[in-house]
Amino acid sequence: MKNRRELLNKLKTKILHNWYLKLLSIVFAIILWAVAYNIENPVTSTRFSNVEVTFVNTEVLEENGQVYAVLNNSDVVRTVTVSASRTIIDDITESDITVEADFSKMRLDGTVDLTFTCTKYDSSNVTFSASSTTLQLDVEDKMERYFRLTAEVTGSAADGYIVSGSTLEQNQLSVSGPESIVSSISSTKASVVLDDATDNVVTYADIVLYDSDGNEISQDRLTLGSSRVRVTVEVLKTKTVPLVFEVDVTPADGYLLSGDLIAETDTVTVAGKNGVVDLVTQIVISGDEYVVTDATEDVVFDIDLDDYMPSSIVRADQEDNGVITVTQPVEATYSAELSLSADRISLINVPDGYGAQISEETDAVTVVVAGLEDTVATVRSQNITATVDMEAWMADEDLTELQDGEVYEIPVTYTVSVDGVSISSSDSVAVLVWQIAEEEE
Image (cartoon, rainbow, N blue to C red; front, side, top):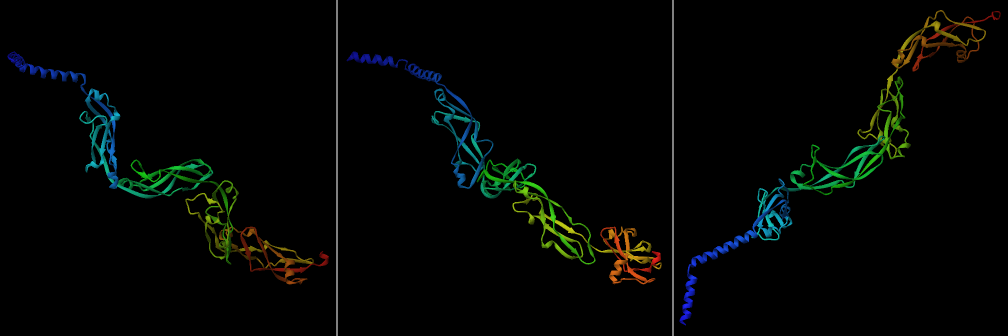
């Protein structure tokens, strides 16, 4: 027993001898082990570029009737640096890194803090640093409006053809998006480009939005009821044909038609489908409304050409209203007196057995030339032919013989070589008649 106790005492003495050195050795060994471990599995980092941000709880804005736009490309983090032990880093790929923006935590200034996580390891094993840590948003109220949709046709039809019109499969368009953008929309159009078309064009056209100044509006932040629409563009063949005016104007007594019918145009270009327009040779303007009697001044007709277009034919030029003015000039009769010397009067058809001559007492006759003033002004005495027809006068007077040496008052017949005038006279001439003795024959 005594030996056992002595043995324990010796052992105790050895253990406690220089005990602080032994403890220090243990601590030092632990430190060496940790250093050795880190040398074999050190903390390191890796960098990932252009990591896209995942949006969470975006319905919060939708429920509040709001829409958003990302500012400054903040939905992509340019660089994300991940730090962890080498064995962990070696196991992480870009697909394991998640960057989220929780819209329910958005601040009043439109910023949202980004949350960085690794799907393979928890935050105790991985740390992050990044080039940006917030998502920047432009948030505003959402607006929806409805617009009348029209076709916008550019380009051209082939020579000899025109674009007559267009129809759309739908004529209304809904547009929703940020109030600032939607409220700036002035018109919506379906754009169709033609290239020498000779027949109807049916196509699906892109819809374009414009502001009040005619500038195109970007659709990036907008939602359209339709992005394209079916459009039919009608293309017609053209042909120029004469206008035929069946106008009947009768002037009153003392008035004359002072010239031909005056029309703003005597042709019209019409349009229709191939084969139909080829059959049209003229456009006739007629009707009771173009019959006028007792006219004392110019007669003016306002004619709507559309009223006289044949079936399936239209005027090619739809820029004007198709109304033309047609005028029939009417002028009061103008008269002037001319003196015609007796030597210009011819005696004709003197009956057999008689001689005749105009009495020396007749120096001249006065005639009245009537017609349009400009025409009357051109008439001279040499344009007038005056004759005394003895046989015709005797027939009118029912005479079969004449008295020798008798002087008869006989009317004169006049003709004029100038068109558009008439000649009248109240004068008659004295004609001396004598019988011719047989021996004189």
